[in-house]
Image 1 (cartoon, rainbow, N blue to C red):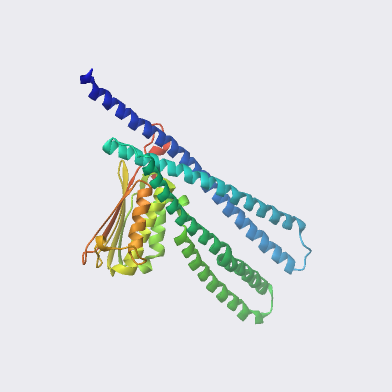
Image 2: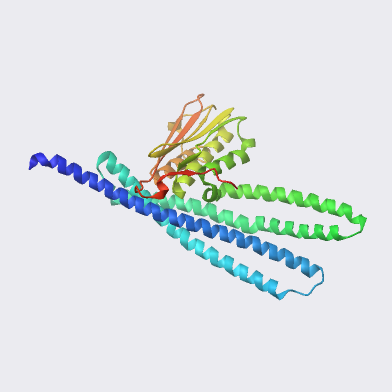
Length: 365
């Protein structure tokens, strides 16, 4: 009997690891379905907002032309706004469930990795610590979402409505046969162009707070857009190495990878005095590797303290990595530049899972 113990123990250990992997795969599948539902609700809400804006513009044109108010148009606007409210409420419920499911998936991923490496499982205290870090990161992202919503519904909406009003004035002036209106049309066009520039700046700030593009275009497309939009703030020499396709990551994994790239590039812009920066994402069988490297002045990572300039960014990146079961390494020294490396584990999937293949993230927009 004793001679059979190693073999039996080995079988049990393999069965435990497989059981964790199966649970992880099942939860990951549910998380992906919820992610698709969130994406669908968001798209429908954006479409409804576009319809509301068009109905509002049509009503303004009708009222100014002296025609009687169209009751059906007003009823349509009320119906659209009610639908928008319902969609917003549904989005909140689904997003909350999605976050809890993904948190549990990350706990399973960490448990599988720990068991595979040391034949140990996280205890209650480990799970509590991970939950606390998840809550902390979630609170930060929720604050970013709150700010982005307030800016979107406040200054951004005011500018958008003002542009609609200017378009209406421009349309009215162009319909006039009086040649004296030509300078007025030019002035309206100038003001409208200036306001559109301001709206673009606000939308870029909103994107910094909440990169919703991740849900539509994935990590690769979002990184490409970010580099293109912020190229003016980066060194002249930029190297960008991205795969054509990569395994599907969870929304939190994609967000963490993007935040690490974003924070690293902001540090390059603010502190490094670099003339060259490279960004690469490489997909391997069991992990995705993200790397940002610059040739700036560098620093000693061990001497960095928690402060607004530099330290909080690195510590924040480490905390984000831990929450999704990833690892982050910062390699730098004075005068030798800096290299930030993030390794994101790929969730286990069952052999029959169609999502286990590579996903093309270079989506059209």
